[in-house]
Amino acid sequence: MVDDNRDEKKSAPGGSGGPEDLDIVRGGAGDESAFEEDFIDLGDEDQVPEELREDRPDPATVPKTGLVSEFHDLSASQAAYLVAHRETSTVSRSPLFYVSALVLGLATIAALIIGFQQTGSEAGGNSTLAVVGVPEEQADAFAQQIGIPVVVAETVEDGEAMLRSGEAGAVYAMDPTGMGQAQLIALDREPTAVLDRLNQPIPVQFVEEPAVDSSLADPVGWGLGAIVLLAALVMGAALYQNLRTEKRNRLAEVIASAVPARSSAWGRVYGLSLLSLTFVLVGAGVLLIGLSIGQRTSEAVALLPGLGWFALIALATVFLVLSAHLWISTSATRAARRIGYGAVVVLAAAGAVLPMFFRAEQTVLTVLSYVPFSSPVAMPLRFFGDNAEWWEGLAAAAVAGAVGLIVFLLASAAYRRTLLAGAGRAGRSAVARRSRKAGRGAAAASAGAEDAPEGASATGSDSGKGGTAEAAEAKAGAAGKSAGAGKSGGAAEKNGK
Image (cartoon, rainbow, N blue to C red; front, side, top):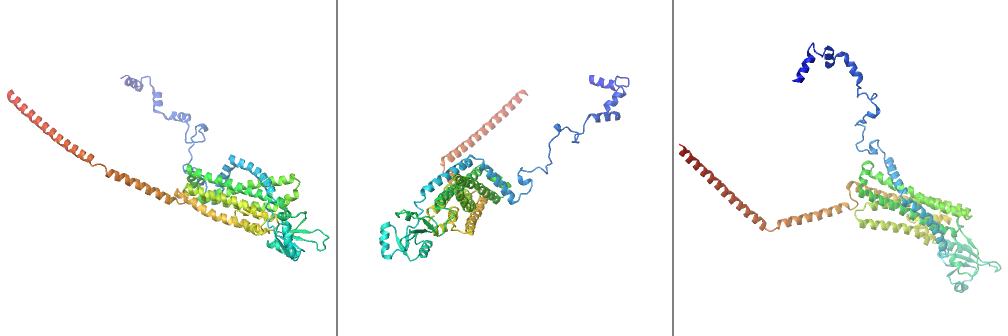
C-alpha cells in the first residue's frame, strides 16, 4: 500500500516527481551520453587495464597436450637430438659420472703401474733362439747351456725370415772372426725370455723398429683397456637403468607420444656414445701430461697416432655395447636380462684383456685387431709396434661400426615393439601364459561353485514352499474377517430399522 502511494505521488503532475525526474527514470536521450562516458566497453582490449585482462588464448592455437611435436613438426634427426640431449644431460649431472671420471684417472695410473710390473714377465713371447755361425753339432750343447730351444740358421737373412714367420723369437749372430761381440736381433720388441737366459748383456737390434718402445707400449695398452672397459660399462649401465626406470614409471609412453621409437633409440645410443669420449679424453690427457712431466715428450708424440685410432675404434665399440644394452633392456623376463647383461660384461672385459696376453704373438694380435670387442686395444698396440698400415685402423673401426649398426637395428625394433605392445621380447608368450593361468583359476572357481552342497538349495525351496503356504493362510484369514465384518454390519442395519 505504501509503495503504491509513493508511485502515485511520483507520477502525479503536481507531486514531488517532476518531468525531469521522469526523464531520468525513463532514460532520456539527453542523459544516454553521460552514461556511456561512465562505462567502458569491455570488448576493446586496448582500454582494459592489463591487470583486469583475461588471458584467453585462441583455442585453435592451444596445443592439445603441450608436447613439442605439436608446436612444429620434428624431423627424425631433430627428435633424436632432443632425446640425446635429455639423456646426456641426465647422465652428465649424475654423481656416477663424476665419480667415474675420477676413478678413470686413478685407474689409468694404476694400469700403467701394473703394466710396468707385467712388462718382461710375458713380453718375451717365443723363446726359441735361432743361432747363426754355430755348427749344427754344437747347437744341442748350446741349447743345454742356456736352457732354451735352439735352431740353426745359415745366414742372418734366414734368421730374420724365421722371426717374421714366428719360428724363432730372436736371432743370435756370432762374429765370424770371433773377435767381435755377438748380436741379438729381434722383430719389434725385446726378447725378454732370451735375454734372461743369456749370461751377458747384449744390445738388441730390431728388424722392424717400433714407433714406441715396448717398455712404454705395454703399460699404455693396459691403460687403454681400462679406459674402454670403464667407458662402455658405465654408459651401458646408465642407459639400462634409465630405460628400466622409464618403463616402470610409464615415462616411455609419454616420450613415444612425441618422438618416434626409432629416433628415441638412436638418440639414446649415439648421445651416450659421444659422451663416452669424455672418458677417452680424460685418460689420454692424464697419460700425455704424465709423460710430459716425466720428460718423455718424444715418446708422448709417438703415441698420438695410436691414441687417435683408439678413440675412433673405441667410439664404435662403445656404440656396439650400448646397442646391446638397449636390446637387453627390452627383454620380458628378469632372468633373460641378467644373462644378457652378464654376457655383455664378460665380452667387454675379455676384449680389453686378451690383446695384452697375446701382444707378443703377431698373428693372434692381427686377428684380435679386427674383432670388435678387442680391436680398441689390439689395433693401437700394432700401431705402437709400427706393424699396421693406416687403412687397417679404418677397417677395424668400420667392422666394429657395422656390427654395432646391426645390433642397433635389432635393438631398436625390439624397443619399438616394447613401446607399442607394452611388453618386451617374448612378451606375447608371457601374456598368453598369464591369460591361461587366469583362465584356469576362473574355471576352478566356477567348478567349485557348481559343486556346492545341494542342501542349501533344498532348504531354500522348502522355505519358499512354507512361505507360500503361510501367505495362503493369511489371505484366507483376511477373507474370513472381511466376511464376518459384512455380516455384523447387516445385522446392525436390521436392528436400526
